[in-house]
Each structure stands twice: as structure tokens, then as C-alpha cells.
Amino acid sequence: MPEAASAAAVRATIGDSEFDRDTAVTRRAPGVYDIDLSAGWTIINAVNGGYLLAVLGRALGDALPHPDPFTISAHYLTASQPGPALVRTDTVRTGRTLSTGQASLFQYDDAGNEVERIRVLASYGDLDALPDDVRTSAKPPAIPPMDQCFGPQDGPAPVEGSSAITDRLMLKLDPATLGWALGQPSGRGEMRAWFGLADGRDADPLSLLLAVDALPPTAFELGLQGWVPTVELTAHVRCRPAPGLLRVSIATRNLAGGFLEEDAEVWDSADRLVAQSRQLARVRLG
Image (cartoon, rainbow, N blue to C red; front, side, top):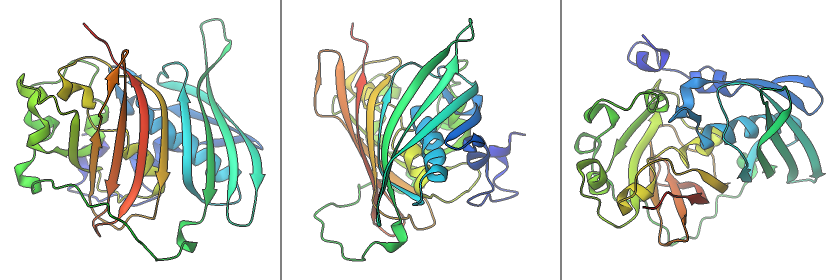
């Protein structure tokens, strides 16, 4: 039985879970890290962008003097594949409350040449040192109770090679955003879901980087199909999430020229907005 499916027997903890093991990097030299990208976080055989963001986020957390990602912007240059990869980090600036660094992930082509897959620029700080003052007009998404939502296990058998990541997620989608699965997309470009890791591990700042890019593409509800690769993604981590499931809401308002934006909000069990993101993605038309 896959480890992700054994949550009923043992609940994983932060630091001791499949996600932690699969995003762990090994320091080869100062600022240089090795990792074996897991096939468990693929969709249509390509490694998920949120998982990659968490990998680079973990490397930067080791390289920089501050522990938590506050903002991280990634440009996805070429599709990453499961297998060995190299991460190089560089410290751009360190200050009292924020440190800024950049990182790139490389893999190798058939001739042994390095190919850059993703490049990020990020600022890190200490989430536990932030003031408690909150002044916001944002509201948590209205998602039906879990027993009224549906996950991948409720649908037909998945396409070969497309569902590895769903085995590692606890994902329950709002029925109002599932028209695409029934051949009746709403045209509204929205996705909402309850979100967690399948082994029961609670969320932390690194897993929030996964959460912003783990739902089905909003393009599905616009009546489009197929892979929707991310071109650029910027995520903001606002506070350390409380234990329990997350609620994720993603929407797009404009598809033009074969590209769309997706704006995501992630809310924790204490009704706090814990992460936000915006990405530009490419879609297949026709």
C-alpha cells in the first residue's frame, strides 16, 4: 500500500512525511544541493510546479539566514522530469528582518549537459515575528461541507500517468466548480476545494507553496482541456497555517492570446488568509 494511502493507520507529522522526504535536498557544497525529484508528484508525467516550488523553497530556507518564505517568484523554463536534479542558490541580500536569494534547478539532457528547469527569486523572514494586527476585506471561500464535495476517487478511472500527485493529496472539490468533469463546464473559470496531504501531515509554509498550484486548472471550467503549463508564478505566504485542512480558491478573469492568469487564495482552519498567488499559464486552444 502506498504510504500516502496509510493515513488511517499513522498520521504523518511536519518533518516526517512523504512531502518532507520528497522535497528534502542534500547539501553538496555551500549553496549547492542535490535532489531526486519524485515521480509521485507528477501530472501527465511532468513534475508539478507547486512541488518544484517547495523543493526550491526548502533549499533557499537552508541557504538563507531567515527560515520562512514570504514571497517567491518562479519562472518555469522547461518541463521537469522525475529523477536527479541540482539546485544552485545565491544570497542576494541579508537584512535584519528579510533576506533575499535566488535559486535555479537543473537537470541533464541526453548528452549530459545541464538544462535549467526553473529559476526563482525569493525573500525570506520569520513568520512567527510578525505582528498580529489584521485589517482585511477578504473573506474565506464558501465551500460546501466535505461530505458534499468530490475528489478524484469519486470520478472515473484516471488517465494512465496523470494521477500520481492525486494519490498524495486529500482533495475535495466544490461541486459548483466540477461542471468540466460532467462535460458541462460553467464558463466561470473557478476552482474551489478542501485541501490537505493524504498522509494527514498538517500544512506549513513550504506545503502552502504546493497548495497554490495543486488544484485542476481553471481552464477546465472555461471548456478547455489538456495540460496548462505554468509560465510564471508568484506566491505570498502571509502567516503560519493552523492545524487542519485548508480551503483553496482559484479564479481566472481573462484568457487572451493563449494565456490566462490564475489568482489563488489559501485559507486555514482558523479562517485566516495564509497564502496568495498569481500565475500566468499557457493553454491549448482549438
